[in-house]
Length: 517
Image (cartoon, rainbow, N blue to C red; front, side, top):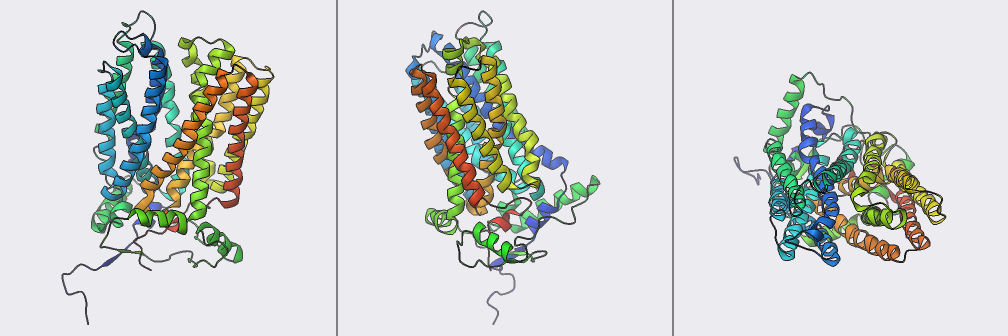
């Protein structure tokens, strides 16, 4: 008996959208996508650096006249906004779609940053900083998801690392902008910092226009009962590539399970089955993906079950990588000026000049090492970058405590450490995005970002601030040693339990929750 009369929608649908997306060559569309969406990290770098650079101007402002406590509190409020924004908008990005959310979050950022330039009290300034952080936090979840879901598997690692590393282009631009705008005598005391925030708002408005023609993620559409729309988008992109003379790749990702017992053991470990037998997945053409059409929103209970019961090892790896990099990064970056001023006598207006080589090292790491994450593999490269950065940070601590390096040597040492640490930190976002099903991908990124930032991002700057306050090099060296230990520990965790995700389809790595077996 036919349970689905003519004209009735089938409860399931079959699709080859992931395979077709991964076979696409790199095209002008992918370049436009990365520029329009990835520029978020440049904005964040600009925002964070400007906010830190204008601290002195906020204290000298006739309208605001902030105290040191209020300057620090405003930075914390921005961070709280980013964490809460990531959680709220990450959840909505999984429910409403990537495209709708990256319009909403960028608009919030633009409005809040523009409003910051017009504030006249601590209360309104803090409120605007909270909203700005919420917009940026939401961007992290929605944009990371969209980029990973559009980019072909063989380019995904390099692209994700470079996009996340572009934060430091914004940081460099912010450092240069702050040096120019806050130059004594150039602008009135109450105008320089306002101009700095106003420029950020204008840049965001320009990016809104860049995003006009960026479509929804076909992967999100196919898992949310809209496969026809996904087919139209992918077919249009295939025609665009063909018209440009770009041929699809004949052979894409390797088989999920390599032949033999070793391959099956790797699959069992990847999928979190422990020592139990994992279901085998055939290599080659495994046929179309079969998904439920009657999509329902994923409950928070199902999210927790997926993270803690289905993929506990992936959750452990993701939390470890995120927390270690957040502590190491925020501890050093947010106390950068304090160390230069207290121990090397660098004037506050000159700090931006020392930030430039530091930013260069941070961007060049993902740029030059990114390709190796797709060729040599995630497990090796993530372990290597975390491990090397930990060893170099420990060596820097030893040189610092002995007073063997001056301000130039300290800056070079930091730049070298973060050449590797930047690639490591970017790979943490890559790992979390790849590790979990599409229906919870944005929320997973938000959750791990929130926990990592909450634990490492808050504790790191506080601890280092206390250590710097002692005025003792030895105390700060112990802080560096703690950061190094966390990075080395993360390297060990990644080496033991890290995923083999290079050149594999996202649906290979984590099957959609809506999949029908």
